[in-house]
Structure formats: structure tokens, C-alpha cells
Image 1 (cartoon, helix red, strand yellow):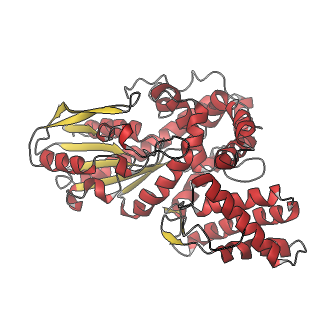
Image 2 (cartoon, one colour):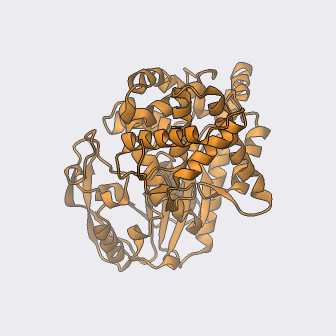
Image 3 (spheres, rainbow, N blue to C red):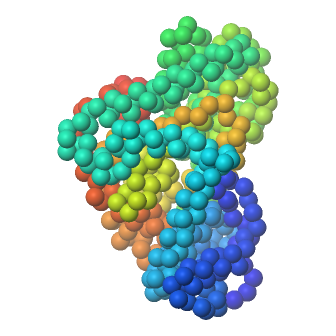
Length: 450
């Protein structure tokens, strides 16, 4: 297991690429081992190489893993190789580093996934004020019968943020010609676009035109496949960026275009289908996974664009005191939606998720600093609903992928979500959730058409 490292770069938490330094991994393991009495750096170096090989086995020889994925691989290797005490120390060290990053929020503008910690702290304070910052709190709310009150409060908080975003657009009129709702997968972009439109119309801004960027996907057979036969359609390069820019320019010039139509179930598109035009006093509305990616709207001057970013900034702790990851919240949303919208089974979405997360780190997170407004779409009340719909799949995923070296990322996620949700009371009757609530975009029963 010697020789030159096969991993060349890693993706930092802020989305930037840096050279991969295996010695840093060795040092992190060695520090954890030393804290429990270990003194063998050579063993630490061996374990670091094992973690690297595990990543290469999972993602291929030319992979560019995230820091998060590297740390997950180290934890997994330490446990599998029998270094229980070191693994526990490494997990504690990792948690302390995260807490140290959070503690700097009052001294400088630090960020997780480029989200200012000030915003994250505001979310945590809101959850604490409403008793839903932990699984214990959510269980208590359900036991006391005040769950409908939490549903109402969460929905009102989200709507207030959307309304404030609409006010920000209005202040920049008539310069703004295009409003972009961007964010990672299953963050709630489409519902937010609809509700933003409603708020603008309530303010008398009635001339709004939407364009569906999903129709600009290339045919699926044009995308490269990996060793599993899986397509990577999370990259912005899966979209016809040249055609998007051409059409956006024509629209803002007052010309009529015909957008394509994409069928997700067949993976094919048809050109020149949907006629669209934009008058000089109208605003073009876009919701897109890659709305912040400069290559998507490079033909449009920055002054004419308003960029709103949406993310599930959930601050709910599990029994071990660890906060649920935002990406895990969105993964569960997408597992449900994919099953009825894209004809995918929930475990298929689980195994595809490493593409999603890597694309977010490379093509979304680096550009968050350019946004004009930020919306939190996390709804603590949705977690008991998601458990009811999905919990049975995670034990199955753990069994299916535990011994598959190329699916360890799916195993790690399934295990992490299973352990988080296990003590939570699930909700079987979601009738108290309004039909225009954001979560209906994913669980069904929405009064909106998607």
C-alpha cells in the first residue's frame, strides 16, 4: 500500500480546491491515537493510506473527494481496523474542530458551506425559542399535541423570509430584469419561486415570467457513465449552457424564443417547444440548482440579476448532541420526490447522492458570496414526516452496502441517518400540514403544480 498518492486534490468546506496532503491525514490520526496512549506514527500513516484507498475504490482513481468525505473514510477505516479508542478520539477531535469554527462567528465572518455563522446562529436561536432544536424537543412537542402549532410557526418564519426577499427585489427595480432562485438539490427552490411570485404580485408587481432551466438538460445518453452505469447530471455541464445564455440574451432584448422540453422519465429533450417572451417591464424568474454558476448567466450584466440562495439550514441535534447535516435533510426530501417524479427507488437516490454533494461543493458553494439574499428552508416539523416515509429504507441500505467497497459512501449516509432518526417519534398523519407548505413539494399533496 505504498507509493505516490492517487488523490491529487480535495474540496474544502468553502468549495475551493486544494492539493491533497496525505501527511495531514496521518497527523490527524496520530494526534487522535496519541490522545489515548498511542505512539506509532507508522501505523497512523498506514491507516491514512487505507482511507485513501477506500476513497479511490469508492470514487475512482481520478476522484476529488471533499474534506467531509475524507474524514468519513478515516472514521470508517479506524473502526474496521479495530482501532476503537482512536476512532472515538478522532470523532471527538472532528467535533471540536467544528465547534471551534462555530465559536469564531463573533470575531469574524466565518462560514459553513459559505453560509455566515451569524445566520446559522439565528436559526439555532429560533429553534431553541420554539423547543425544536433537538429530537427530544420534537418528541415532546408531539407528545404534548402542539405539533400543529410548530407547523404553523415554521411555515410563517419561512414565508417571512421569502417576503423580505421580495421586498429586496422591489427596491432594485427597474434595474433588475432577472430574479434567480438558486440552491442545492431539494432545498425548495421551486416552491420558493412560486411564493416569491405571489409576494411580488401582492405588492403590485404582476408582470412575471418564469423559465424552466431543467428543460435545457442534454439527452441523458450524451452524459458519461461511471462504473456503476450511473449518469452524473448534477454538473452544470449537463445543461446546454450556450443555449441558455443565447435564450436569456434574446429574452432581455425583447425577442420571442422557443425553449426545449425535457422528459426526465425518458432522459430526452425536444427542441423548440415552449414559446416564451419578456416585455421590457417584466421580470424573468429562474429556479435552478446552478443559478449561481457564472457560466449559466454570463451573458447578462450583474446589475440586471437578483440572486436569492436557499438552503436547509437545519439546527436539530440528535441524542448524541450532533446536529443533523443539511445535506442529509435534503437527501431524504429527494429520496421521496425522486420515487414519484423521476421513477427512481429511494436507495437509487441514496447511491447517487455522492454526485449531488460533490457538484454542490464545486459548482454552488464557491459562489454563495455573490448572493443578494439568503433563505432558510429547513422545517423542523418535517423530520417526523420524513421518518415515517423513509426510515425502513436505511437498515436495508446498511445491509446492502456495508460490505461493498464501492458503495461505502451510501452505507455511511444510511447508517448516519438511521442512527439520527431512530429515537424520533414518527408522524403518520400529516393532515395538519397545509397543501401550500414547502414540504409538500417533496411529500406530495401540494396545491401547487410542479
